[in-house]
Image (cartoon, rainbow, N blue to C red; front, side, top):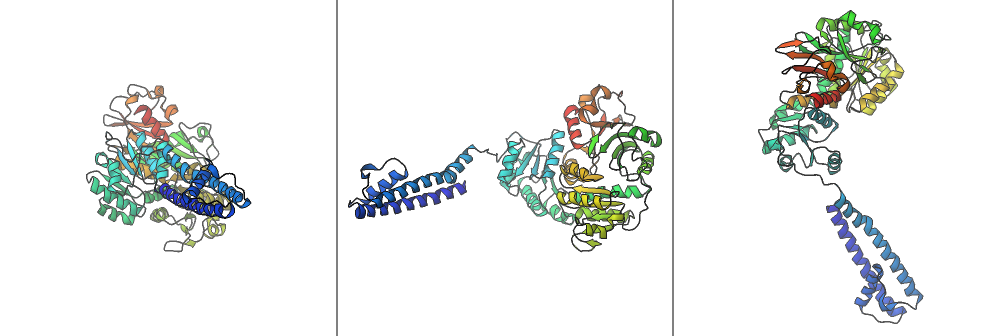
Length: 544
């Protein structure tokens, strides 16, 4: 609105100046060319009549060519100034009147909500987690255009600065269950300080990019400081370390030795090219295949006639020994791991966590980064074939892409595929929307930072929330489902309705792992459910 006022002031000054100039010229012209002496106010009135197209009074017509030409110029100038007023004044005023007004405060009745500062793709993943559990939230967004877009998309939002006391009071922080600060390390610290002034008793969760800055956030007053990037890096590294060690794959422990794991099928595995039915996975390992990723699309239950490829990721449930046996079946015997055959591209927070995990597991690796620094073996552009060839990608068993830009990651995947079609590509992306594109580019396993971030925060701020898997493509949660009480799992059509699978049931202190369609859910049961984030959301909306 201040901009409109400034425009109005400038336009008004210019208009008055032009009209006075024309009035002086007209007054002089009438005396010189028409031989008529007029008062100056009369000349000014004629100019006003001309500019407003209301008439010319008693002065028309004019005898001299000079005055007729002058009046014609004055006519055109008036029309131009009128049309200039439309985009400069009228349109902005109408837009301001007709535009959506984003609230700066929330209604008084809202309580036990989560205050999110501010909107990002990571916040979007958190919103999905909260909505799936029926928890209210308020996003505090300082950017007016962004806030308007979100408000029109039915997000719960206030347009305010989260670094100010007024902004957090507008979000009713005092009655909230928690505040989440996830903008940048410096801004988050400022938000935490403001939150302490508004409501020191409300738990504050701060997300940092650099784990070394965690102490400063705690000093500012954060109750919990999360660092999802190292967790993401360790999750990606586990896809390599579990392929070269004889230990069981990284799994989600449900209880009594029963675990749920994601197991990628390696390039060169004996399972590649077989169908799920013909692979004999169930008979040979004893695990239960509850789902599978095919080219980035999750299926539960998976089609028995689906062909297993090097890009297939199996979601399985079973005992640790059974998972170990399946892990052996999915490994490739075509190559031995030698120095340099695992290439890590990108050495930021995620990449350094990957390198550390590989070193701890005894997996030789080569690190590529744009900058030459400690820990980097090859310096150069990750999308240049010469850089990747120098790092040994042509002979690599696996390449882990830990680049911060999704577009660059997609292009780097294509370059790796061109250099070595058989190399396993494991990648991180920022946005969940980039996952499907990465699989189309040729990646074997992809994990989104926003997904990991959302799960970590949800686990931290939701009392009793039991998110078992943080760094997996598939989410595993422990939850109650009142909507299923008294029903058999098969009759409730859980899989077809939600794309989720109930892998276990906790009942009276016991863990039931033989969960078939005839199992009837009883009151007090807690279910262990596996599915995509969207599937878990549908499950909670339908049955929880």
